[in-house]
Length: 237
Image (tube, rainbow, N blue to C red):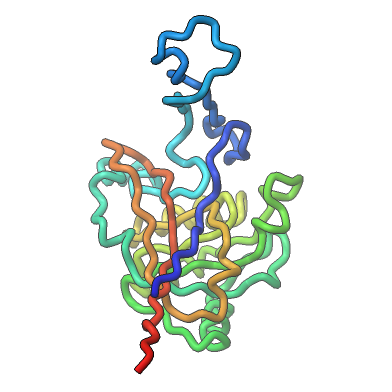
């Protein structure tokens, strides 16, 4: 038996985006009524939507070339798919307050509490409950984040990526820019705007999948991130 938990936000017009990134626009491009030759229909039923959005919309992953200008060429389409298909763990930081930093010793303590180990190639998800508390509200942009030291500590563990519920992996104007630089330097990445991480707490290791679109030269991509738990089938003998 397989349990699949959706970790991705909906994409819709008017959704919050980070600072000056492109706003999401969505409109009906073709309707079934037009395809059927109906003139001046009272209702247009969407057959094809036109979308306008940035690469870093909703739940997304950053490419290495997003981290700093010296990583030009390391775009999302060049990154190995194995980075986005990994084992995963989720650690509980729901006690953290707005704009608080998460330090390496706290990651270690969270691992001990959950009886989990960070392994090479893992995706480490950081549950802060910020999405359920603050999504699309005044403090949505003021979430906790990893410190500079934590980013380097995670990178030195040779993880594939880490993931957060917030719009940025670090705290803006405190650690966020440096966290991006460290990801580029050490060759790992991060996911932003994740949801449903509370459903992963206490359930151990899982299969993580967060495949990006194959955007030529892309600096990132929206993903449909999921956690998969394989349960042994129960047979009656």
